[in-house]
Length: 202
Image (cartoon, rainbow, N blue to C red; front, top):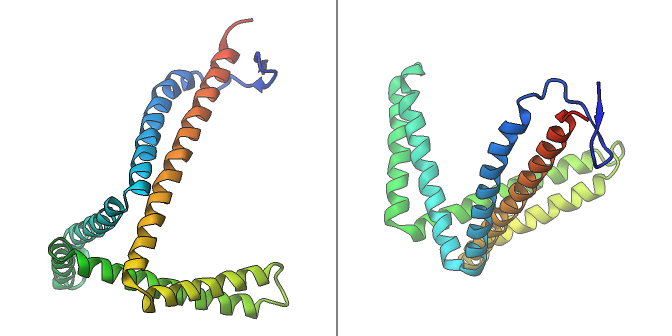
């Protein structure tokens, strides 16, 4: 049977006997994580050098994780040496990323530029081919062309500007993630309060 809480909304207490206590414990951790992400995002926004350094270490961490995965799954391959070779290459890439940060960031810019260029070309071509069948193909086509333009800027523009753009994108992404987590934590808290109110006897 449904119960109407003090906010005028109808809540169904069936099957949610354990939800309030679990939510009360969880929403705080989500809130703390969101606040930490917010703080980190603000730091990266106002400290471009920190953003650039973070980009480099993200590449290092990704290479290390890829090396671990390659070593761990080498025995599952038909030729184990392929997995070991891949792991060694990833590990060598991580060492290079630590020892020569400039090379790491340059490779990262090239990778982003190639990805934007190829992805934009594919999107523009697919949108153009669907121009008589799908609504909104023009917007998709325009976004594809913008992606192509961005890729060309990354590939043939100033590497310093490209790295700065990536750093700003990273900072904004971290900041928005923090905002999202804080909003999620508050929403979970409201849900817990509504369910708890629905379970209280009238």
